[in-house]
Image 1: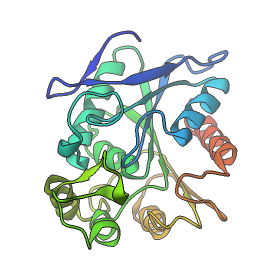
Image 2: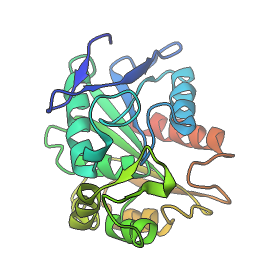
Image 3: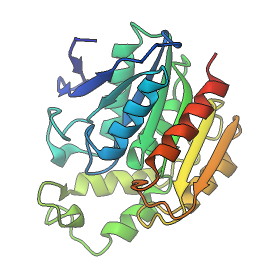
Amino acid sequence: MMQKIVNSQGEVLDYSFHSANLPTNKDTLVLIGHGLTGDKNRELVVAVANGLAEKGWNCVRFSYSGNGDSQGSYKDMCISKEVSDLKAVIQHVKKDYQKIIYIGHSMGAAVGALVVANDQLGDIVAMVSLAGMVNTLTFCETEFGNQVPDDSYMWDDMNCPLTQVFVDDLTQIKTILPAVEQVETPWLLIHGSADDVVLPIDSEQLYQQLKSARTKIMIPDADHSFSEHQPQVVSAIEEFLDTQII
């Protein structure tokens, strides 16, 4: 994979390819999407890509537009735009791979959920949510409810302005639950019991909503980024994929 990945707005998306060690799933590619204020180089994203590549899975970790080294402005960033980005990535890689697995962390998991909900061609054969955001309105109110959009920053990070575009998008989506009601794609949900950014109830509600074959793993004392539990996360994903991908 050496070609550029370009979204619908002509912005080039930065990505890194991890070639599988002794690949046993040559027709399958794992896509890994980061969460809010992140990029493809976040520690968890890199750990998952490296861990799965060692187990025989080809992986691509990428930065959504406006994040990391991907083109675009962070001020335009929102879930709906990232949905469009993920669709562009899938269209690009499906030329070379018959099966696509998507792993999303935090808001990146919400993005994947909305894409798989409209995946009429069945491009995504398995989903993994890591501390996945489900209730977007609740998240917005809890984390940024006392801030003024277009006049403040996410978690005081000067590189991450809180925009009205972002707030309006989270408010309009409200929750991904209705969208995934008919999804049949196998799904793994991993959450940390000590997550205070996206609360564990999000994964519990998604688990209850899904009608597909799904697995939920709650890791005791794990935080939002699974800082001390990344090997456990990788092992759980690998075990799930081994049972789902033929």
